[in-house]
Length: 231
Image (cartoon, rainbow, N blue to C red; front, side, top):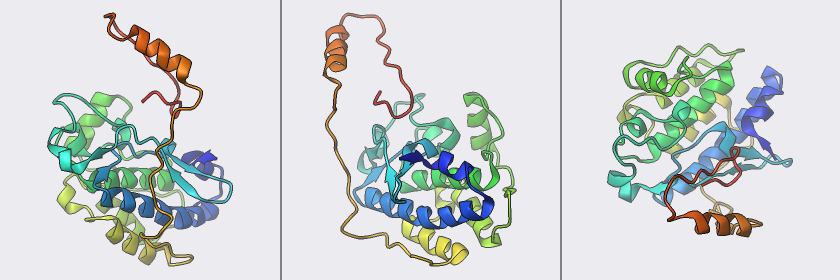
């Protein structure tokens, strides 16, 4: 399996657009299923999107996913949950969330895939927060030719107010297919959609060590690379 970002960076512009044309509908289908379960991923980013050798897309790392039925208490005030570079404004403000927060993150992913940079030209969390809450994203300057409709769609996904974004994944898919075409169209419903709840494998010694240290006071730090199972 490969991360979506790594896969796209290694391709020519035409191949990159072709891959996006095939993979984005699959990602939307997965998000649609998730949102229909009344869940919000809350940490959608390129590192949490894997593509296998058969071109199948896997959305991973649901450690931060929460039911939007509990959206009024998703996050304690002053606590950031998610990856700031892809977080929707309402996440920064600990506001109630629904699937449109994930669609904002999708807009950031598409913006980066098409332009090679993020919508917020800053690196520090405090600067990202200020930029997201007070400014519109930098104008999208693609690395190659794209339809004007695609530029507009990315802009709609990155609107600061959730009400100004597309309402759901079905709407985004319809707009996407108008931009890119309907080669090998993917439905947002189907019997293969589902959530996998795997058990921890090979982690018993680690879990035992954590349990033995919890409650002794002080700070317990669990460190590791993205995808290593810290959550």
